[in-house]
Length: 168
Image (cartoon, rainbow, N blue to C red):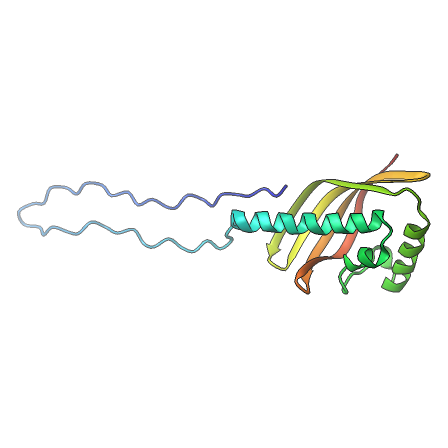
C-alpha cells in the first residue's frame, strides 16, 4: 500500500510583546511573517492516491485474470505499445514465447498480493507485487516490479522485472 507523508507543518511566526514605548520613540507595527514558500514536492492528495491505487489494482486484476483464463488478447492489451521485454528480447519474440507458454499451461491459478507503489507523475507509476502462479506441473511465487505508464487513458505495463523467484 502506498505510504503517504504528511507535509511539514507550516512555519509559525512568533510575535513577542513589544517593549513599552519610551516617550521619545514611535510605536512600531508588529512584524508580519513572510508568506510561506510553495512546497517543491507536494505529496499526492489522499483522494488522488486512492484513485491511483484503484487504477493499479484494476490493471493487475485484469492482467492476471486474462492470464489465468488464457485470454491472450486481453493479456497483451495490459502491455504498452512501448513495452520492452527483459533480457534484450524483441517484442515479437517475447509475444510468441508468451503465447506458447500461456497457451500450453493447464489449470492456471494466479494471485497477486503485497502491492506497493510510487508515483512521481500522473502518467507513470512503479508497482511491486508478489505474484503466486500455479499450473499443472509448475508453481512459483515471484516478486515483480512493473513500470506503468498511462496510454490511451489507462495504465499499461511498460517494463516488467522479476526481482525474486521462489519455486513451489
